[in-house]
Length: 435
Ligand code: KIV
Ligand code: ZN
Image (cartoon, rainbow, N blue to C red; front, side, top):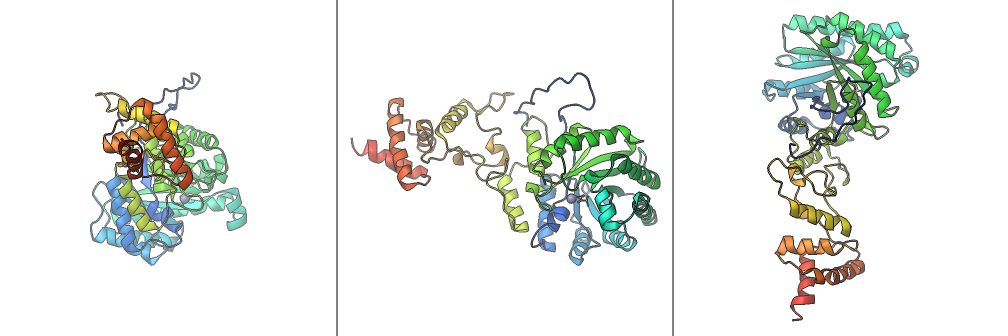
């Protein structure tokens, strides 16, 4: 990441806090095995969840929501398997979701019995819509659900004697909840838990349904950070869904607005339009010279395991991870990339500077070979680049436009991309055999 430059920050003089660029990775929490899994047409089996968990650990997640163990036998069995087979590294904390209902909370504690580090994640819905339409309860009644749930988690934690158990509370549908009311509920939860600087709790403020522009969500997070009664007793976490297609921007702005922690899923898997794509956000940091503290240096392997476990596709133009994002089809792009590539490798301490490629594909395990493809849109520079790169043939400048025309004519006729072998054969037929 040191080969990428931080974007020059715009000086906003009126406000000095929070910082207007992200200078450090947030605490990440993967929700692939819970929110991601619950949105799959065919949920993962225990075996697939184990594979996925190991993938997430290898990427470097230190907090992983492993499921909703009180909701299904598979989820319960998976939590038990992780714990009993000691599959959880010491520096990794598993997180388990539960509704604020007594029997579900008790079952959740059964599921995590024996875990060294676990976060019990309690949620209840607080929005006006859910209060009126789904629960038909008033503000005080909804707050009481959160408080009673928190009290039970507190009691069961104390009874378990397991100091490794932490607590997260989500006012679900936060984006549809009045801010002052959400704050009131969170204050009640903090009091019930006895949150302090020594025993921080996680307050996760979900964009359960993305209902506005990212800056509006970020303003809400900033307001929350400023108004919470003991900022040092809580970690502020964000959990963005992608209904408006802006979940990554939402999470990034929320971190700039003061959030400490970000929940998301690989390739944006999750309910409806997905959860925040953690690959994109991490690599956005990376490409601005910030260590994301997650390792995406082997994206092809990560994609393969993800596809195998989830049976989901990744869009070919998904930022950073799509199969087509390190290709250039147009001639002028190919020419510019070719010139940029020649100007590499970087001098020590130098910066990555290849036009049209915001990052070096090799940093994410992708191959230079696939970058320049030749079709009817390609120009002379690209054709020459491919011949030189693949066969060491340097065609003189005067010959390049002529040969590009030959290649384009074939590509126009066939309507498909040409392989490097075909280009080589054409070159041979045109210039070598004739002589
Ligand atoms: O989207 C959401 O609000 C959730 C909560 C359970 C945190 O997934
Ligand atoms: Zn969610």
